[in-house]
Image (spheres, rainbow, N blue to C red):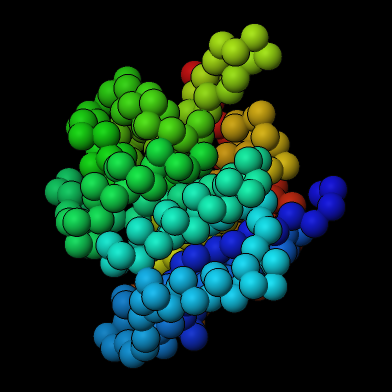
Length: 312
């Protein structure tokens, strides 16, 4: 990588385990990025455990941290990465900061994982307050360059349902028109051509030609399902997509293959270790299912491609 590439990552933090900044920082550093992390929350562990304790950063506290960076003239970034946020005023402050950073560096790339909810047994539900949706729709997404919603979040942002691949790409076109040039629907409940053991992800990248016209590349990926509930996978995905789109800016196919293949290596290693720890016939606990990030360093740095993307 030429020169120093710096990322401002505003995400949650846990003392134990890998979600939010803990899931994003390590892969970004392994892939050569300097990362400045702002912890939107500081919890003992992720909320998939029976108990957790901790603190939540307010919008005023976020503003104070940013003002400190600005006072020392070290608020110069190439990328901003954001994930889970629960509070409307905090999200509004993030918008203000990204706006200011884009004003001083027009080439800054904002990667947003619009974490709002998911589908369980076919039914979608939000796990953040409803009043965040209009802020994402009207302010965050129009400013983002890359977004990584799941199917339910893409439906929320576009106001359209997805029942087929064609409808998914129509939704992605709506999202492109809102602002982002790169949209990756990280998971969907659409039937995969490879069968029910596979999960389908879709990507769309809009590129501008020298003459001002645009061309859009579409891809589809199918990943084998893993029978376990992992936490932090979305945060890891967004961070690695940031890194690989930086290294392959005009090739969404390669960027996504490297991102998804690295994910598969991490998840397979995690489930193997978790099952071994849990013992024969026992269900692994949340602690045993924490992502094996450090052990997967080589796979993150140079992933063997195990998931091919299909260009559509």
